[in-house]
Amino acid sequence: MRDRIDRRQFLLGVLGAATAGVVAGCTKGGRAPAVAKSAAGGATELPPAGPSRLMIASGNGKSPAALTRAAIEEAGGIRKFVHKGATVVIKPNIAWQRRPEQAATTNPQIVTEVARMCREAGAREVTVLDHVIDQPTRLVLEVSGLGEAARAGGAEVMAIELSDSPRLYREIEIPRGKVLTSEQVVSKVLDADVLINLPIAKQHGGSILTLSMKNLMGIIWNRQGWHQRDLHQCIADFSTAVRPHLIVMDAVRILTSSGPKGPGDTKDVGQVIVGTDPVAMDAYSATLFGMQGAQIPHIAQAAQLGVGRIDLAKVKLQHVAA
Image (cartoon, rainbow, N blue to C red; front, side, top):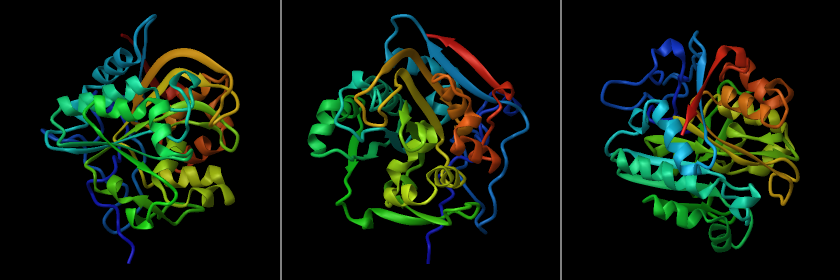
């Protein structure tokens, strides 16, 4: 029998003005209830009526760590998401053997800062986790700087390889999916109290852009299966069931060509964006490439499925000086 998503797993609401400035669903003294669907397997709720919020930190000469902390503090602080004693999974992009300046993997300073903030909030366990594609894994962690970055923040690293046992995964149902009806997800993610998504914004040959929703492919078993089916719809379907509690987008330097691995052209944007609405996050991030969210099929499809807001006129873009 398929495992159902535990009530602890995934955030249902989005950060919106209608939530009186707090994370949707936050409970006093704890983090948000984390359900992707009801215990009976019903559909997820739609986003709240008010506009979603994105915190956009930028500052000339400011470090990625400073931008990250400023944006998260503006969102209400890490304790809005991480309670004392929590187990946290942080999901950056660690797929490629690329140096940080090549913008194919998440900036190490952002990974360290988020892990450190989780520890400051009293997290019992912090794990930086991703599916590593390039081999050997040791060199990927070394060249990208992400192995040391995780350790510097007080986190452990779980670098999953294709050869790893499928027993690391558990099947979940995706009742609202149009292409996906179920998927194998890393058990470590399902068992965590908090999931924080740390994508880097970049061009992608298959999905046009790889942003927050696409970044979640690193927690599934059959990645190739999505490419063989309808990649965009699979990304949107999965986002109806798996909802990170917090998204921290690395747009300090973005990869604008030859993605997702590069090397390619890069652009210094100097931003770290924080929010909880993945559609709004990805729609805004698309503008950094001169595109609109509606031009990216999986962003538009996720919006149609009620995952979040694609119309940036209905999203509060809150600029933060670091």
